[in-house]
Each structure stands twice: as C-alpha cells, then as structure tokens.
Length: 230
Image (cartoon, rainbow, N blue to C red; front, side):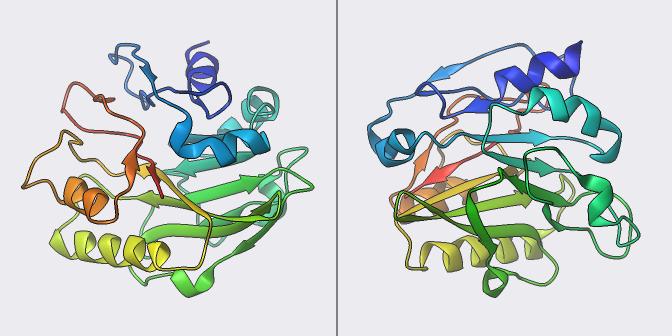
C-alpha cells in the first residue's frame, strides 16, 4: 500500500538518518538524506523519534496510523482538514494522548495536529500562537531537557503576510528558553540556499540546521518537510 510505504520512509531521528517527505504526490521519486547526528545528539540519546506527514485529511487515515505510526513518539500532521465540528475523542490513536490541533479558520482544508505518546509530558505553548497562521507549538520534557516542537502549514498560494506571520512565529519560538527546537511542516517553498530565499535567511540568522537538504516535491521544486534545529 502506497500510504503505508511512505509512512515508514518518514521515520525521523530513529537511526541517525532523516528521510525526505515525498508528500501525497504519486509521481514523487524516493530519495533519502544521510545527516550527521552530532547536532541533535541530545534528542537521539533520549530515544525520542518524531514523524511529519502531510496527511491530506486525518480522520479517514486513523486506522492505518494506528498500526503504522507506533514506532514514533511524536506525530506531526499537516493538512489535517479538520473543523471545529470534529470532537477530539474522534481522533484517538491508541498509545497516544488526544491530539493538539490547530484548524484552518473560515474555510475547509489546511490545519496542523500533533500527537504525543502516552507517558511523555507535553503542553501546548499557546503564548506562541499567532492569529491567522496554521501553526502549533508544544513544549516537551524529555530526560530533564525542554524541547519545543512546532508544526506549521503554509499554503502554496499564501501571500506575503503569511510569510511575515510565519517568521514571527518561528522567531518567537527561537527566543523561548528551551534546550532544543524542532520545526516540522509543509512550507511549500524551495529550500535550496539563496540570498533571496526567505526560509534560508531565517535559518541562517539563528544558526539553525536544515535537516532536509534535497527537494521532496520535484515536480514544482518545492518542499513538503522542513525541520530546523537549534
């Protein structure tokens, strides 16, 4: 099954490798990136694993996730397509707490949800919430260290104001008092380094590390998954 296959390719930080998220595009070619573990050794030594997937409607895929996502401790989903009418109890995945989620306001589509495995302490950082941006931030305590995990979705047709909000959100998160910061999401941008690339400039300005360094949506030269590490 195609969906099952891409989930296994999206296991992040388990063995020191980071695999690009091919997204839902059936024409995407499978690629992988080997990344040095030195910059996130604390997370690896904790045994924490994190997965991101552009899910394109969460509810119909819960049965598959119940089986395929169990190897990961934190599940970050973008394009959840949820609304205020969906009850949290209807989004249950066994062995995980009920999800934190940020839904698109005013129309269908978009949205972000994060699941955390039972036994891991996590709280939503609502102080980092920015009106009008599909972003969700959690503070997670692991081995006496504080990790901030963010999930962000930027629509491909988003205007410049969305970029301003996105940058504000990430800057706020970087300025929190935490040991490590991870941002996962679908930004719909080209991640190739360039002086005119807003994401590249933001990453370099905070001396962060882009874990995905190859295109993961080759038909449009855009990226489905981007993670920053401090």
